[in-house]
Image (cartoon, rainbow, N blue to C red; front, side, top):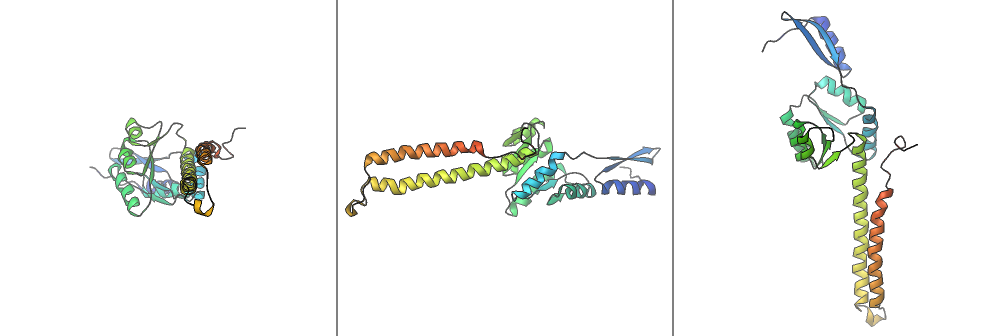
Amino acid sequence: MLELQAPEPLLRFAERAGAKGQSAVYLVRDGEAVAAFALADVIRPESHEAVARLHAMGVEVAMLTGDSDTVAKAVAEELNIDHYYAEVLPEHKDQKVIELQKLGKRVAMVGDGVNDAPALTRADVGIAIGSGTDVAVESAGVILVKSNPLDVVKIVALSRASYRKMIQNLVWAAGYNVIALPLAAGVLAPWGILLSPAVGAVLMSLSTIIVAINAQLLRRVPLTSESEAPT
């Protein structure tokens, strides 16, 4: 592989581009670099809000990228990302997920390419971009149909709300079985405390209704911010 040494002006240009989160591409003629171009991916406006809302929920945000360290650092600083891993080869993304898991972290991986598939499978939760490759979609457990990074925030919010409902329903069901059933069976009858079987049956039916209604309240969990709310 032929290595080229770019002129000093082009190197300075590439350095300034890297500081702005841009990648430098050189134009080579007759074995010499004669020009340089700065290329950059535009950061979606939703990404800023997505990272900020994840932080507000106590979620750490990490970025895996094959770009140079300079570019990755600039993007991470702009989005206020907690950790970034630059110059990561495709086959090493899976290893980075393992490293985070060994630190005791539960990892949700978001990706869209063929190279992301192993990491999506390895993560505790794999989230694929709907417009990504079929391999990534098949490897993930959750698909973002609209390809909107803010949907990641909604996933976290909905999963936490669902977990709270599960705990609430479990407490209610356990309370019924621990208290109502023994009373209906006459455990405290010698002390004059007795729950008739008919009332116990009513309470059991009421328990089922309360659990169902409580689950339906998930529909009222706010998943959108004020900026996304319909006008």
